[in-house]
Figure 1 (cartoon, rainbow, N blue to C red):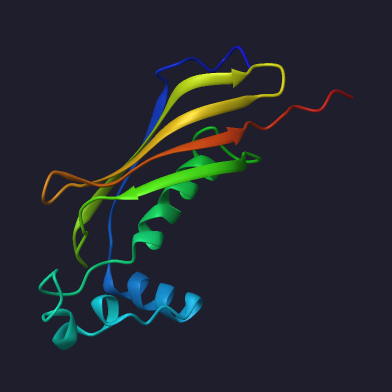
Figure 2 (figure 1 turned 30 degrees about the horizontal axis):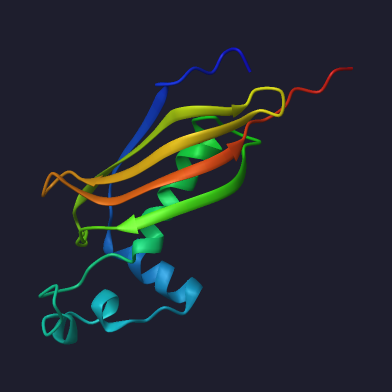
Length: 139
């Protein structure tokens, strides 16, 4: 646990492509017109198609489970605030940062979680997660 300190962070950058949006709609059944129908989405407050907020949030999970803290990390809690839309073809940056070591003995961390739209340079999602880091087994 002593290898984790407040302020440590990890990032993921990627472009969100149409196939991911369509696959997410198929997997979840969320075929809301603002995500899958350009004609109807043009009539929305967004003026066109946008990426599912929960698809964007799932990239936070990608960072937690593969980079930082990494494999074996257990999600305990996630709060999300959806602030600005991301459009298909936009590039995003996911930032995960330790803001508190809640319980060092149990390996519990509180993390700031953000998704930034690199095209608009605006925060798309702001949130906070609580995770349990992977514990090494003693043999």
